[in-house]
Amino acid sequence: MVSTVSSIDNLAVMEAMLRLIPLKLLEGNIVYLGDFGTIYLNLASEGVENEADFTIGNIKGVKVRFRPGKDFLESLKGVEFEKEQ
Picture 1 (cartoon, rainbow, N blue to C red):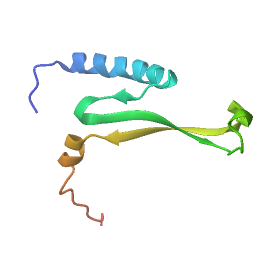
Picture 2 (cartoon, one colour):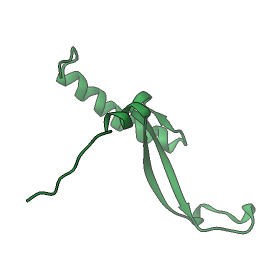
Picture 3 (spheres, helix red, strand yellow):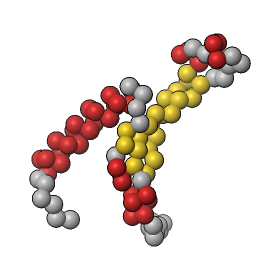
Picture 4 (tube, rainbow, N blue to C red):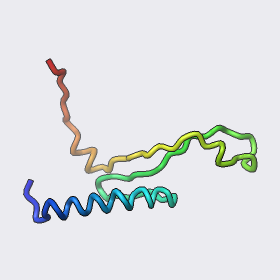
């Protein structure tokens, strides 16, 4: 693929994203990456009967989730797999 952006510029953008995306997620934001997709946090917790009884101690895990955009998914259509010999 031919690009007018240098490899160094690409690397700089990726390094900036690696710093910025976690900060935005920790602020409670969903990170929108255009046609590429979205990145968001998903929490697992123990249930409680009353909302007032819920504390951060009920949170049992945090996962980073990626939801690919339509164009990204479209580019994967027709993918084929084969077993290695």
